[in-house]
Picture 1 (spheres, rainbow, N blue to C red):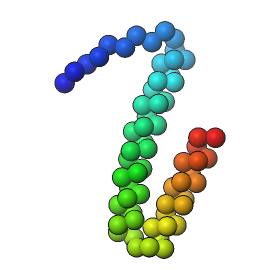
Picture 2 (picture 1 turned 180 degrees about the vertical axis):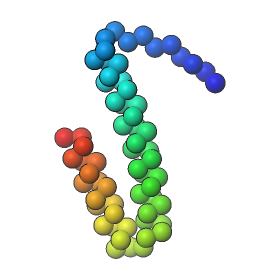
Picture 3 (picture 1 turned 60 degrees about the vertical axis):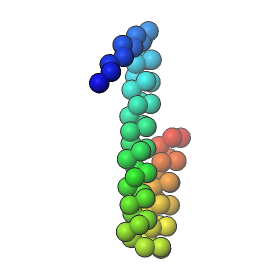
Length: 62
């Protein structure tokens, strides 16, 4: 396991960095869940599920 030391100049930068890290983690998890939903739910349910997920993701970015 490699640990890299990162020096962040301010709390605001640290907060921004953590938000990016968490957003990426959640995005990967959500994408995995969406794919699983498509495979298990069937056509119409999967389309509805994906539409809701994409709408929620879009709202969170704005």
